[in-house]
Length: 101
Image (cartoon, rainbow, N blue to C red; front, side, top):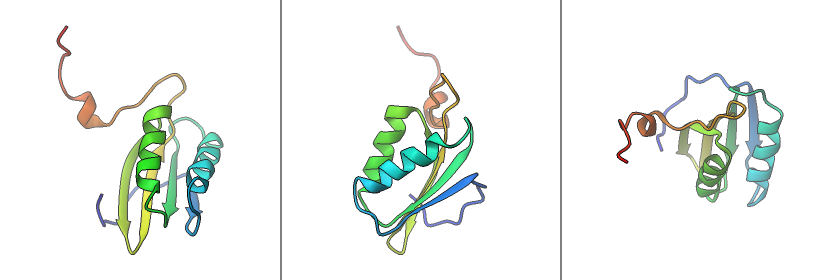
């Protein structure tokens, strides 16, 4: 994670500061469900458990964490809602070349 300021323009921002597990992930799921495919959610949390929770949520649902950062006790995630029927993977996973059979 980085401490940089993002240039990403989210369609929705969700403030989960002060919430403890499982509320940040439940609120994130509800917010993502309200977005169109390809839209970006910015979620801010003060719960360190959000790091593994959002990562697991992303892997399970196919929504892509396009950026995450932390600083000042806050964790910020930019999550792109998966395109319907398509699981997105980070670019570094997509560019690994052919798969050996």
